[in-house]
Length: 532
Image (cartoon, rainbow, N blue to C red):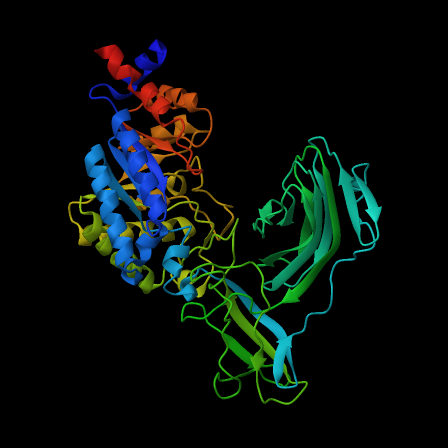
C-alpha cells in the first residue's frame, strides 16, 4: 500500500487524482434507475467525483416519452445527493447502432461490383453456382488432418483439444468484390472454447462475426456473411483457437454466392443495374425497368438500428424476359462481433444526428463536460461517400473527429471534451490492417486538438501510449480495472508517474461489476492519505 501511495504522489502530485466510474444503462427501465441511485450513493461515499454515463437512448431522446425524462431527473437528483457529476457519453462512432436507429442506410457499406444476375419468372436473382465447399472430403491441407479430429459423414468431431488450435480449413476460389454466405451446423458438449468461422487471406480477415455458441448446445445452424473485397481466393476456417476440454462437432459447412443482404441505399452507396446480354452494357432505370429495391430486413432486427448477420435477401422484380442477364453493383452493411455496425462518417446527415444528440443531451444534463464515444472503428473508407474524398483512413478519421469536436462545441462552446484513446493511438488501433478499415489509420490523432482529454485504455502498451498523448499536450484519464484484478491499477500508476497531465482515474467495467468499486477508490486514494 505504501509503495502504491508513493507511485500516486509521483504520478499525480497534488491534488489527488479525480475518481471516475463508468456506467452503461437504460434509463427507460425504472429498476435500472433504482440501481443507479444506490450505486451513486456508494460511489459518493467512496470519494468518486464523476460518472461516465452511457445510454444508447441518448442518441434518440427526441423519440422518447415522459417516463424516460422522469427517470433521468431521478438520476440527476441521485447524482446531486451523492456529490457526483454526470459526464454523458455521446457520439457513438464505431458502435453506431444508436445513431443508425434514425436511418440504417447510413451504415458504412462494402461494395459489390458487377454481380451476375439472371431473370426468371419476373425475378432477377444472383447466379450462385451452387455450394463451393466439398463437405464430404477433408480439405486438401494435410497439416490439419491430425489426431484432433475424427471424420464423420458431412463433418468432423473434436474431443478435448487441450489448448491446441482445433480447426478445419478450406481453400476456396471466389470472385472479387462479391458477397458470400457461410453456414455451418455446430454442436457442443461442455466445450471450453469459442467456436468460430473465420475467412482469411494471408493475415487479412474478411469476417469477424461472433457465432454466439454456448458451451453445450444441440446441433445449431450458424451464419457468417463476408465480402471478398479484391481477392480471388480465400481460406475458410471452422473450429476453435486454443480450446480446452469438451466436445465440438462441425457438420454440413456451406459457402454460397449471395447478393443484396443488408443492402444499403443512399447516394453515397450507389446501386446500379446493367443489362449484360447485348453488345453494350445498358444501364437500367429503377422504377421503370425494374421495381424499386430495398432490403426490409436491413437494420431492423430485432429493433431499429440493430443488424443481423444473415436473412433472406430481397429479389429484383422485373418484367424483362426470362434469361436476361444483368450485372448488379451495390453496397451492403456488415456486422462485426455480436452485431456492431459503423456509421458512415462522410455522409452529412451523420454530423446532423451528432449535433442533435449533443444538443438534447446538453439540455437534459446541463454541465459543460461530455465524452465522445469513438471506439473500435472496424469498418471505414469502404463506400463511395468515403472513397470519393480521396483520403486515407487516418486522414478521413482525423477530419471526422475534428468535425465532431466542432459540432459539439457549436452546441456548448465551453464544453470540456473527452474521448477514448484507441483509434488515435499508434500503439493501439491507429495503424494499417485494422479489421475492415481500408488503408492506414495513422495520423487519425491529428484531428484532436490538445484540449480534448484522452481516456487511455491501452494497458498492454501503456508506457508508449501515455507518453504519446502526453507529448501532444493532452490531459489524460486512466481507464483501469476492466473487470480484472483491481490491483492492476498499480501498473497503470507506475507508468503514469513518467508523464505529466494524467489527472483522473476511472473504474471501468463492461460487465456492470461494481463489487470492487470501494477497493479501487481506496487504492487510488492511498497516495493522498500518505501525503497527509
